Image 1 (cartoon, one colour):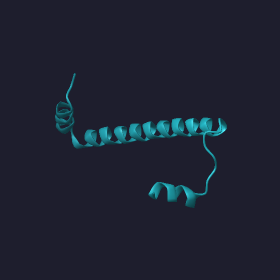
Image 2: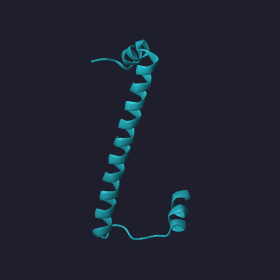
Image 3: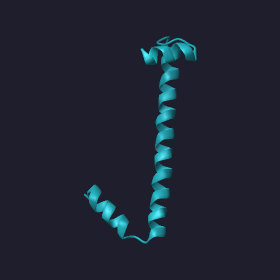
Length: 68
């Protein structure tokens, strides 16, 4: 298994344009991963709402609860 430090060393040994390509690929993959997480969270929230485990609230109410 390649360590994080070894991976960075390999990337640093690449030409700058290839390093930029690696960066773009990683940014795209991270965005896709975050989108997938968000979709899963929304699905779970909708399921909980449908089951009556939560109720609608205004933004102001939610913010008061978050700040409390």
